Amino acid sequence: MENTVSPVDWAVSAQPVDYEEAVAFMEARVAAIAGGEANELVWLLEHPPLYTAGTSAKPGDLLSPDRFPVYTTGRGGEYTYHGPGQRVAYVMLDLTRRGRDARKFVCNLERWLIETAASFGVAAGTREGRVGVWVERGDGREDKIAAIGVRLRRWVSFHGIAFNVAPDLTHFGGITPCGISNPLYGVTSLAELGRDVSMADFDSALHLAFNTIFGPARQVSAPGLTAGPAA
Image (cartoon, rainbow, N blue to C red):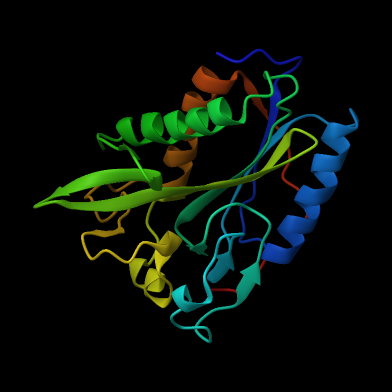
C-alpha cells in the first residue's frame, strides 16, 4: 500500500459534468496540490457523450467528426469516448509523496482497474503493446473494458481512467478507440458481459480497491460545476 500524509479526498458528481469545466477544475486543483495548498483528489463523474484526442491521436482515427463534440486534451494516448454509463475517475495524486515512479503509478492504476473488475467476476488484465485493461472473448478476440490516460505536472497526476459500466457501446463507432483497428480487438462493458451493476455499487468496489492499492480515501463534496447537456 502507498504511504500518504493524509487520506485522499474522494468526490462523486451525481450529474454529468461539462468536459471543459472539468479540465479547468483539474488544472487548478493540480496546481494547488503541487503547491501544498490542497489535498490529493480522486473525482468520479460521467460526461455527456464526447470524444477526446490525446497527445498521440491520429486525425484518421476520428471516423465521425460530427457525431459528438471533440476535445483536444493533454493526456497521453489517442482517441477515446466518454459518455453516460461510463465511470470516469480523474486521479490527482502527488507522486512526490509516492516515490516519483511514473511506471509504478501506471501499474497501480492498472491493478486498481483489474481488482475492481474481479469484484464483479470479470477476469481482466493488461496486454503487451496495448494500453488499458482487457478481457478475453474467445476465438482470439479481446475487448477493452477500461482505458487509462494520464499526465504529470510537477509530479502531480491528472486525467485518469475510464471504466465501461453500462455505456452505449455503439458510440465508440465514431472513432478508432486508442488507435487499435485490428478487428479482433473491440470494446466491452460490465453490462455487455452480463453484469447488472449500478454505478453506486461500482463506485463502492472502485473505492475499496483504491484503498488497498493507494491508501485510504475519504468522501468529500463534489466540485460544484455546471452539469453537461443531457445525453
